[in-house]
Length: 173
Image (cartoon, rainbow, N blue to C red; front, side, top):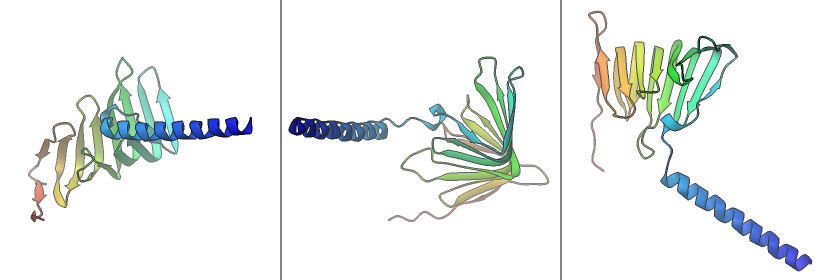
């Protein structure tokens, strides 16, 4: 009986290890895009108005969705009539985020006094003292818009605050 039990335990251990290896390989091969992963939020306190579809989080707010991370003082989430997130508005001094849209690529980061994220468009607006940085390159301006799907970036300057771009030289390896 003990020999049979030991054989079953070894078989079970081998099966579990094989499943874990296969699961890891499948996940690595079919990575789920950030925009399709769950949104996890932590804050000191929260208030929900289900009738209006609004949630407000206050104090040391952190949001994680896949490789995306956002930190702010206040976060307001507005949902549409289908209970889907329409917009997330983060404010802070500054609110910050980082993301790695390509698993093999560099991490991008940004900061602004207000960050608006639009999940349906998979885009973000950085408003007031906005800055985006990736691979040592930096763009600053009063308003920056970045689309995570297309990689397109727009900047809106003003007479009082212009757009500034700093590009690092690329060296071949």
